[in-house]
Length: 407
Image (cartoon, rainbow, N blue to C red):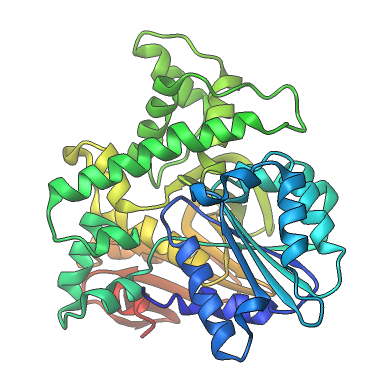
């Protein structure tokens, strides 16, 4: 098990704080492993076995606890009355009305609660209502490139990056022999599980908005996901997707497409980057860009002839900025565009991302958008080439592989 140090640090920071720690992320990104790693950390710090209660609701051994009242009774009999009990509930969304049990645990003395879920919808219903202001979400992604390199242990980082682009970042995939066929089989399993199983679980929960439609057309859902995977790095509108599907022979409403996109976002397959007016410093609600959680999954969905290195790199940078705790937007500056505006507290960074800066026209285009920004926040161009690196009138051109490694 690779130590996910960034996420472990977040759990350590929130340890024993009076909030519920909710770890979210796509299936197989490492949430269960993170919980086990943190339990080992607790034991190494002197916490006793009797103080840890860990339940994985994908394990049939706990099937009888699928009723939230039985779950409550079971855990209450195992709580350590004298010391803090550390409660770990993995894939909690499988339990109907789980939020009632979690709320009851929360009001008890000396219980530190950690839960995981593979669908953001668990935070949009009754849990959010019951526990408003009493939980913190730790959003988990598959392996970063730096973590990928730790598993591969190879000196040629550029070679490893090409492999990272090809097979993606799911922890189990990284441990497989480099066989495209094996990787495809595994990714197909993840994709089908997310599309079918997680979306189905989403339907079983009560929605606070009865106008939202059930996601019951799996073929349509897969069509929408393939369209989004093909459109990484491009502005997305509901109309463009609806028109595309209609042109293929079936009519679909804008509202249905919108609901299906939300389902894919809630299952952490896609993330949305809204547009940000650099001059007015406000968020624009039209035509966001979408990024996929894993490039291996994108290669699985998208025809190889439509694969674009520049957009793939942009996708990786977007995810890395999220890993580093930034809110990430697409920048609009007059008639120009900045690939990313990354915000954290009062800190802002501007990024342009391009596979190469060696063509003069490309160099000028990428620089032009950053030069047009009048404020003094850092401006960075990330590129895969190593020939144009340097500082150009305050704009840093940095090798993307080095940046991903934290150099």
